[in-house]
Image (cartoon, rainbow, N blue to C red; front, top):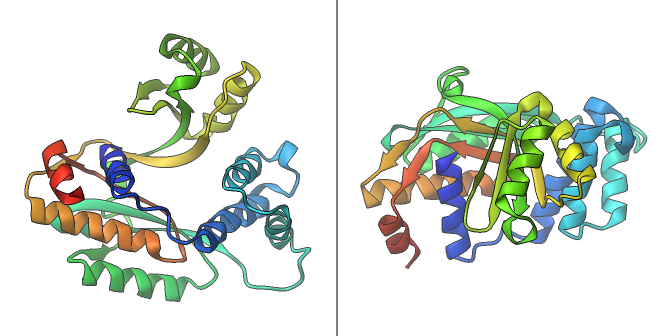
Length: 251
């Protein structure tokens, strides 16, 4: 997880937003469609859909877009392409392991695009199972630090069944078992805790410390290029970077 956290910080320092708003809406819509397909179109009975809609609304996604995405998932929008969820594995420079979550209507195109992105950025796409064992599937809930005391979050989160609570500069980070994410999030919400995100993620068991600035830059460029792809929903990597290197790369 350290890799993802550092990487997010780099993007924040560089003031890089998640590409154009239209592309962000596309990613959010795909998550809503897949969540609907997996658990039905009623948010009250589908916690993944409920979380996807909340994330879309937090980004000011229009209600019509949300409704269309739900209808696409239920099949009420007429015949159309089927969106599949896939996970690809690969290696970045420095031996960094990368997991890429994809939602696509054309898996052949997605695989070809990812292979090209990896090769152009000094990495390589790997076979299934090559790096997945280095990560654990977990739920993650982020809560603004300014909104609640750390001890209170810890108390409420553990009572709700969370595994761990940590923090970065801006957020309390609640970690759960993958199958407990929505239950813990609902319990926190009922206790008056307002989260700004909840998601399933992959957390590495160990991380690789990148001490070579040029290698760190290559890894960051690869991860950014992957996230730019329309089919990519999430990217996870097991690297860490020192504050000094981050500062130089962000300067």
